Structure formats: structure tokens, C-alpha cells
Length: 365
Image (cartoon, rainbow, N blue to C red):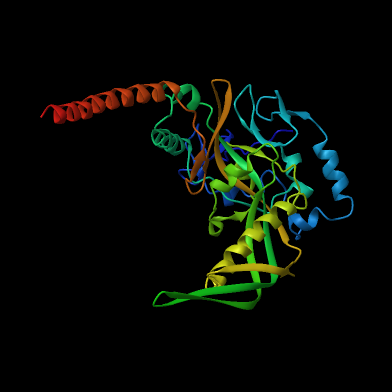
């Protein structure tokens, strides 16, 4: 069954209004606090462990593989009775017949049940404004790119993220060298001093985010970080009403290599300032750093997406639905570039004639 949350006053479908930060009924215009409607779709569970622990329980991996093995599934819309066809990773969508928001609650239970959610703070109107502003910032953006046709494709999507709480015992030994010089008369003396360097300390990070959806670009997601975790709430499906949502197809364990790579960058950023005094060089000779097993939490993050094609190529725009941070790559207008090219040629021709005139005039004089 594809479920939706109903208005207590008129039984129409409710959606989460990001601008109001309330559940909103488009028919009787009522508003409700999402907390009041808590557990109206998904039953409250006594499960106290986080998603990372649930995915390691006996039989969990088998159930996850089985769930992700379906290419698609048909659900019945509880508003009009029509069939809702969703691909294997969709957990919130809309009925194509009546337009009702549809929560595929079978895909939000057990190992796929999120621990947290950050609600959308920017509605579609604000996302459109941000998109226009972003387009204007690109000097080569084609004029016909900013169109109503493209704007209609702007989609609010909850992206599945794994959040990692992790500690590390950093233990790095290396060699540093400083160089100084002294000049006396015509003689310069260069002195190089070598040092054994040891850096050892405990480092900890909280809620490092990595998206768990294969088809969502990782670089774009990193570009719109960070999220404000103070506004993160215990998962409540009410916030998903009126938006699309993905479920993860990459587990927290699958993403650990990416986590390790990011942690190495973080450690390097922390260590680098402490070895700057070695102006000649600093070389790592022995790295015994230990990264402990992380705690993994599963959260749904708000993102506005726009996927478009231009001249046969795919382009993406996205905006953090909580902070308004934007990222993407805009298409390039070759017409604008040609116009600029010929304009520059004209300017260079005028400047060239002026310089030649000065030279010839100088010779004549």
C-alpha cells in the first residue's frame, strides 16, 4: 500500500510545507505540527538500536540484498486506488493519477528505517529563486536554458545519508628539516638542521555525512555540505509528505573506503599546521594511525535537484534544502563565446591600427 497522511479535519492529503514548517491541507487550509501527527503512518517501534547496528544483525544482509534485488514494485494508492509503480529505491513519491503524496512504508522499516531526518527549510519558490541567481552568475549560461520547462523539473528529494561518529588515534613519525642562510662578505653559508618528528593524539569527528545512493553524484553532495545537525530530528515520515525520497542502496559498510579517504584528508589538515616550521621539508616515515570502528546513523537529508540535457549532454543543479547552498555545472553557450571572440578581435584590430598609426606617425615626424 502507498500511504499518505490525512487531514484530521477533512481527510484530504496533507503535505509538509517547508515555508510554514507545518503540515498543510490544500483543501481546508488547516495546518498541523508534524509532531502531533507522529506515528500515523509508521507504527512506533521499540527498536532502540541505530541503523548501523540493525544492518549488522543476523540475517540483515540477506534481507537487504533481497529488498534491493527488485527492479520495481507496484503499490496501491490509498487515495484513488490506482497503481503506483516505483523503482527499487524509491520510498516516497506521488500517485501519477491523482497526484497524492505516497509513502511506500514497506521500504522504511527494519534495516531501511532512518534514525533521523532534517526537514526541508526552503520550499520550491525559494529553490527557483536560488536557481535563477545561480544561472545569472554563469557568464556563459545559454539564454534559453533558464526556461519554465526546466524549472518544472526542479524536484525536492530526501537523499539517504550515512552519518559516522568516529575516533582515531593518530600516530605519525617523520623527518623535518629547516634551512637557514648567513652571508658574510662574498660568502653565503647555508645550514640545514634535521629533526625527528612525532605527532600522536586522539582525534574525533561527529556525523561525517556520506550519501548512500549510487545514482546521486557524490561530488555534488559534498559541495552542498554542511548540514546543520542542530535542526536534525528523530525520523518522522510526516516530513516526507509532498517530496520524493530515496532509500540507500549502499550500506554504511559499503561506504567505509570513502570514509577512510575523507578521514585521511582531515588528519592531514590537522597535522599540516603543526609541521610548518620545517621550512625545508617534512616527510612521513611511519604512519601507525588507528581508525576505530565508527558508529553509523542513517538519516534523510533535504535536497532540491534539477537534471537537464543540453546539446545532448547531462547537467545537474542541486541545492541544500536546509541551508540554501547550491552546486552544479551549467552548460556553456558557444554563441556567447563566439560573440565575445569576435568582439575581442574587433577591439584588437582597433588597438592594432592605433599602435601602427603611432609608430608610423613617429617615423614620419
